[in-house]
Image 1: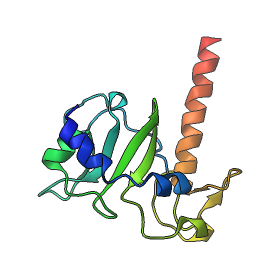
Image 2: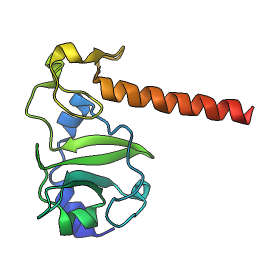
Image 3: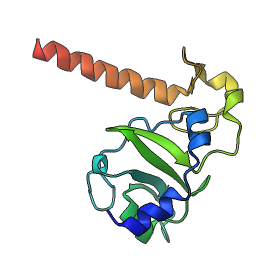
Image 4: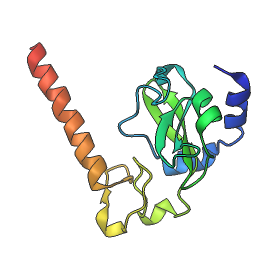
Length: 148
């Protein structure tokens, strides 16, 4: 891992805000879209816009340093690995206050409160994230049945 990139990204982290909002990447990417590097071995990954193309990609820090635009709402979100496979949004938050239920705590996208579902732990989820979670759960159940 390139230390200067990690130091640069670490300076952008707002851990207090991240712990309050609790927005996780769901489902988390496994590899960098640009170089195919295994992201589970990284401290950070960026879901961000690419220079010159306007397209977005999940990038390892090194690819973001070369190809990414910025960290900030509408430009790129910085995720930090809390534990293997669990990624917390730590920079590039929505300007909306998540406490009013206007932001999905899983994808970070803004929605009208009426379009979100409140979870038992107080988090909010959009329909897309609920569908993805259901799909992941069904795949796990099918795998368990096959192994039995």
